[in-house]
Length: 430
Image (cartoon, rainbow, N blue to C red; front, side, top):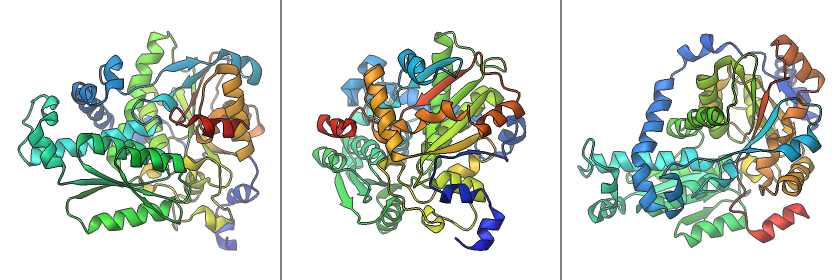
């Protein structure tokens, strides 16, 4: 890292130390100053939510596991009372796990945005060929003539694993040809799961960013190939944001208020940024200044924090500041952030913190022992979030924002784990 960059962005020194670090966003502003100026709006999020509702009967027919939820892809809120008692004695308030690790079809947070974008492409393709009329039931997409049309198209994506499963399985089940460009971080079991579903897996001996680049380039040569671009996709972003509307209803049912006296803190594992940024955007739309969103990133791969600190200038990657991008959190092993997603939330996010790999395993193990919940290392990244509020930087943030934690609610957002094979999970524990 050159001297000029370091002088311009002194916070980068803390990332190069390769120690756990909480960064508080100095550019966070009230939502009233930010949301009206963004290129996406609350209405866009509602539109995405309504599209998913229209697709619900179709999804129920397509995926039997969605019958009990009437075709709505959503995860539970789980009160983690034992975890709160053992791990967070100094944090007042409620501790809740948002169980996206158990989302149906894909078994990860990627089920939200990934399935949404594939459905959007299916809708647009069917309408383009005159196979789906306005206000017609989406069950129509199950008909043979529609499937024959879809067979002519390929849906592809670049992934470290979870987004690949979301896109690959959904696209193949709808009838599209499906191709996933997998980076070097991708686990073998995730590749095998895709192959078992009939998805073409293209392996790359390079990191996530390169896999996305190669996938994007390959798709340009095929007019019938649709590439889901995790670094630059607004549909993905909006699909993820719908979670906020659902969370509002879930909290209401559990009689949990969110207001200035009852602040909400949400801790989101972050890789390239599409999912956590989309969720954070939605949460700020729904709960305004009463929700405080923090990203959680591996110490060797804090690409979104790097982007936020530098204003996404100069296209810096974690390699440029001497980090390796090597982490057991394969879903978060990303060297450069999504500029699209990061730019949209740069004035909304409260901060970001880094986590050591050994801590990911420790938190995973404690969660399993105390709550019998199984997640993968990536999903454990946010579990140290509440403890960061007791640090000097955390206390300063609370004081400057006049926040009283007495009646606070803390949500640990898990991201993947339910599909992890038994032997893999026991390797995590060991």
